[in-house]
Image (cartoon, rainbow, N blue to C red; front, side, top):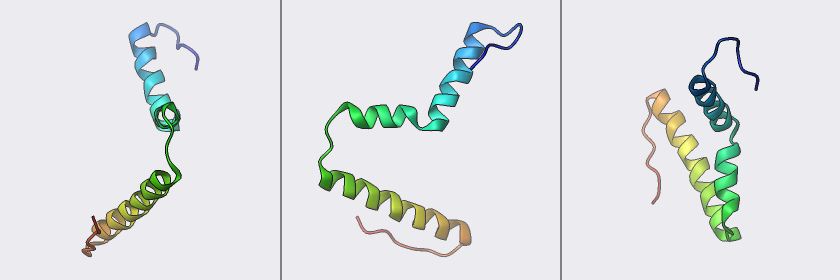
Length: 68
């Protein structure tokens, strides 16, 4: 990331943080900070899949209940 001409450091830092957040680097760093058991990894992936289904159905206007 390069500084734009006349850009303040605060603005550049804000832009950098958004860039990192969108790319997924920050969440990957948080995830790899501690060991995650394979069962927890599968559970997280399943919840992500169910959330995606739920959000798609909500956008379409149909109701889908998620298991807890």
